[in-house]
Each structure stands twice: as structure tokens, then as C-alpha cells.
Image 1 (cartoon, helix red, strand yellow):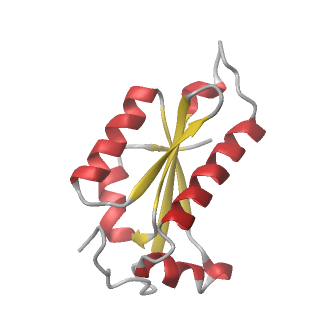
Image 2 (cartoon, rainbow, N blue to C red; image 1 turned 120 degrees about the vertical axis):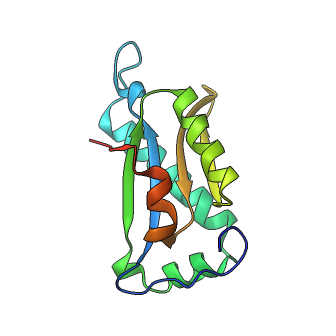
Amino acid sequence: QTGGRIMEAGRAEDPLVQHVILRKDLTKKPLSWPAGSMIAQACHVVSKTLWEMKDHANVQKYMMDVDNMHKVTLSVESEEELLGVSKTLQDNGIEHRVWKEQPEGILTAIATIPYPKSVTAPLLRHLKLFR
């Protein structure tokens, strides 16, 4: 189950994982955002997601074991691709948030709430790791 329902979560063989998806195109010309700016985007969207979904059972379980968090940071090549990933997540009942950097008004990142890896990984396996 997904969305607002409780997942059977956190088993060692199927750990809770939070996925973060960043726009790689922002690091290239003409914008050429530095690594620090991209790290900030990931931090913003993770903070927003965990705060806004703090009452969800998966988030509570994940935050009770902060020394053993699992995150996977993936990349997309455009705003259109980012929006496509958001739609896929929404269509599959995966709670997530999109970050819009202000004052620029640029969509930069997505973070899911933590889900068992078996739930979210199949939806995102086509994406490359952010490097």
C-alpha cells in the first residue's frame, strides 16, 4: 500500500528509502549552477517533504532511526522530465513534494517520503544517479 496508508516498512531486506530527484540540466550552461546550489536544492526539498508529512507513519519510523537513514539521489535532464516523474509518483500514490526555487521560480527537485525500497525503486529505476 502507498499514499496515506501505513506500509510494512523498514525490514532489513526492504529498508525505508527516501528518493531525491534533481535537475541535472541546471548544472550545465547557460545556468551552470554550482554543486553547493544543487546540494541546497536537495536539502530544501527533503526538509519540506519530511516537515509537511511528519505525521505519516513511514516518516515517523524513518526519523526514529536517523543514524541509519537511506537516501538515493537521482537525476533528470529537464523540468519536463521532473514533472513527468512527479506525475508517475502521483499516479502510483507515492507521497512526494516538488521544490520551486525562489525568487527564480524554477522547479529544481523532488523528494519522496521514505517508502520501502521495493515500492519506489521500480518506479524510478530508469533514472541515473545524480553525479
